[in-house]
Image (cartoon, rainbow, N blue to C red; front, side, top):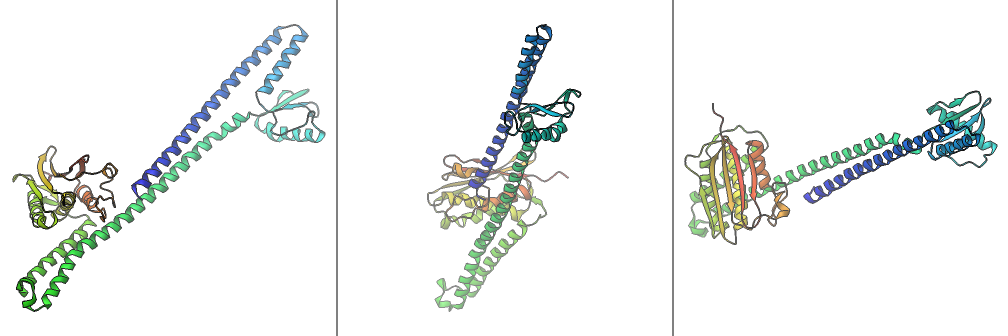
Length: 400
């Protein structure tokens, strides 16, 4: 999955979570307002009843009871009033279905069935069993409130499932992309020595007088042997990257020295006009690592720097110093065009490259070697404007 797609999914999940959270807050606020309104209504009921009880006028009592009845209806609580004996229908309000006014005998039967099968299962009826009973339920707000925990749990579950699915897909895609890039990198690194071997084999078949510079068989054999060593080095590198190699004391001075000789031999052809500066003290402490893999990791960074400055001229500087906490810090800086903001945060991801036709695997391998194999750290210190600096922190051997 590309970085843009990953960000799109992350934004979508973030929006979904915020929407669920906003819904929960709004719904809770609505419930709170409803409870507050209920409390106010009950207070009004209490006041009306109290007023009716303290009045000795029959008309006032009837008016108070009438207002009380209206307030109960306004609460939205479904209720059915029956008279005893026999449980005959008297009146009702706030039912979840439409009825006539007054209801027909069939509707009365439906209302009484609703009171017995629904309302009485939730709350026992109140009143005088010898004269009148009130069968009541809960408001629609309270009914929705009962579902809120389940809705919230379902929303969170959906979010978790989506996040898990996206995460697994990202991991699978990243793994596939990494393996594809590794295969391409292997083919690329094997292609150069194999092509050279084919060229040397063709020269070997020519008569000595037709060979460039009248090269002898001994000279061609030496060149073939050199390409065979290069092939062995490439195969050894990819063999080691798939396992946990045994680490030991490695002279970073020696590794950088060999890298310097390797690059200087190729600068006239790959980077004319590019200067290579190395500043590594002779007494630089050893590091805990694997020489073959460490050389490969640093070579990838330096080759990237060479690609950045090749064609326009510039310089590449390699420096190393001991650091606090038993670390050795190595920096590789170039004076190239720098790294764009779009690529900066994903520079070590598989498939991310700034080079036309590149496969974006070199820095990925370097990070794996430095961080997973050596327990170190590689980071891009600056990438704005001209010039890029990669910093590599490597641990020194433990004191025995």
